Image (cartoon, rainbow, N blue to C red; front, side, top):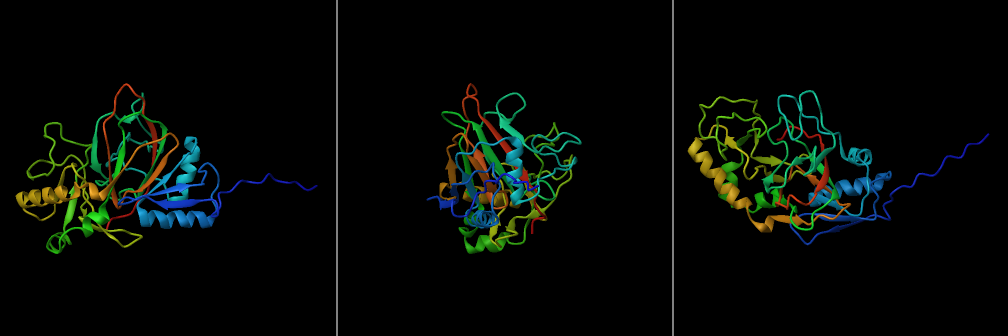
Amino acid sequence: MTVTLPAIALNTAQEVSITPLDAPLGAVVTGLDASKPVDPVTILRLKQAHRNYHILIFKNQKLTDEQLKNFAYYFGDLFVPLDETPVLASKTGVTPVVIPVANIEGGFTGTGELSFHADHHWTPYPSSGSFLYAEEVTTKGGETAWLNLNLAYESLDAATKERIKDLQLITYNPFVRNSNSPRRLYRTDTSTPLVAPVFPHPLVRTHPESGLKVLSLGYETEVSLVGVDPEEGSALIAQLREHLNQSKFYYEHKWSVGDIVYWDNQSTLHRRTAFDPSERRVLKRISLAGSRPF
């Protein structure tokens, strides 16, 4: 007896369009249904576009958590935090997979403004990227912006590039803090005991796939430079953060229901504007495993 299996609908390269934004980074992907299997040519096109444009925006999607996870697996393994380096939504012995970035019960990050940052900079192997999928959005506020760290690095003057080329940066875990210590942008008091392990990474990172140089620095997370006088280090980091805070480096995204944004966590920062707490905003995030920065 011959058994005929049902045909599986594939996304094919002929159907999928990738259109760069008129912005410092980003491209929009149309003609792809992320709930269905994707053919190899399309996957390779998407990976190359992600290297080139740093963020990809997939429009008009409708996914379950499991479908979102399956789509993310095309691009890498999932990020697994260690107990000693907790991240958003971490609980001891529990590895979050799909995290609700939402202002509803069980959600995370609240409704306030979030400044430019990269996820997991304080871990030994920061995530390579993340997917954020919009299920419910606000009428106003809650926009997310992504900043091109390669463009920010290339825009530095030659003297600054030479000054920072070999520096190592420690980013302190914002989820593990001494309750008696004030929140700081730079750790100048080296006598304060550490309450979590720290992992120095290059301030100027080489992207592991593209080879591009990026200025690997968040805007407000507490940091310090290894082997640099604290006052000198604080002044240098403030100078670099002032340089980062320029609109010519970033794109701001107004969310629509069904959007997925897949960003490169190794070459971008992201931030969120505040929004009205009376409005529901429900997005789902999945992060991918990364490697040791170099």
